[in-house]
Amino acid sequence: MIERVRVAVVGVGNNTSALVQGLALYRQSGSLVGIRRPMIGGLGVGDIDVVAAFATSEEKIGRDLTEAIFLPPNNFPRLHCELPRAGVPVTKGLVDKTEVERVAAALAGAEVLLYSAPSGRPETARAYAEAARVAGVAFINTTSDPVARDRHVLSSFEVAGLPLLGDDLASQFGTSVVHNALLRLLAERGLTLVSSYQVNLGGTEDFRNLVENPNTKKQSKLNALTHGHPADQPATDQPAADGPAADGPAADRPAVGRVEVAPLGYLPHLRSQKVAHLNIEAQGWGETAVSLDLKLTVHDPSGAAGVNIDLIRIAASALRSGRGGYSAEATSLFKSPPGTAV
Image (cartoon, rainbow, N blue to C red; front, side):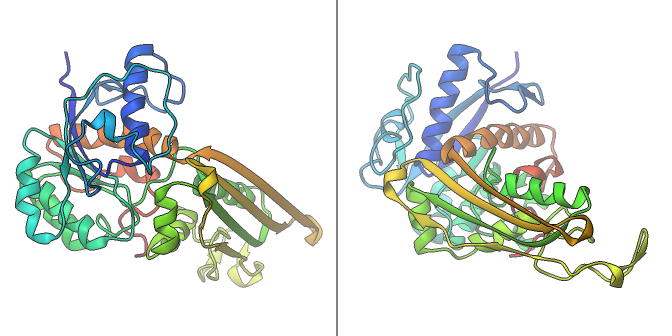
């Protein structure tokens, strides 16, 4: 029987609530609803144990993890499952870089550290990554702060033979994933992009934090809409690369349109739901107009948990097989993998 993955989490917010509750639900029900990959490296969805949790909220520190995930300002709903006590008290999180050794010691017994704290704190994110490296633990950065994109940090994990995955989750079915797919479809069908934008509204604390501290989030969203596109696809706000095309010179092609990401909007009454609006303006045959408007409503924390469940198993499998550094298998699960803009 395969050994369960031992995971430590940083951040006891909505995303951790969705993950912890979901693990209990899938173990009890055996359901595969909403599961992208039932098995990864021989590990099933229920083969994960959370063995440590870190938070900075005084109200959550010292509480059992299964109690802390329901404390305000968390607002992800209760799932229909029994949730036994985890026996994992929430530990005081890292305050500054001087506490790396303390956190590393607290990671004893863990295999993977899932960093699910708010974005906009790059020094804190890198300090937790350093604690994971010192402890010999794989690190997953779910925030838009550059960790896996930091060449020095990534190299240190490669040398140590430890997996480092990041940056910034591409939600299971979120705005960036849908927007990217539509832009790709546009190019594949031969239409020319004129302009496109996305607007995201949400009611979680992460949304509130990102509204107040946008920092790298906008760039990360733009990365998600551009990385992986061939050079001649119109999915960026930069002109297409010079060079010959399959059926004629690049100069013969129309100018590339713009893709804009509006600032995030925080609306508390939305609670854990995210509402996104997408618009695409394009031209088809004969330069005739094509216009698309789309509204997407999802539970943002569920979208994160649906990706984290795969990332944890990818990281654990890489760790157990001695593969350090970044795992290319994780690329589609991030907005800003190594090599994208910071």
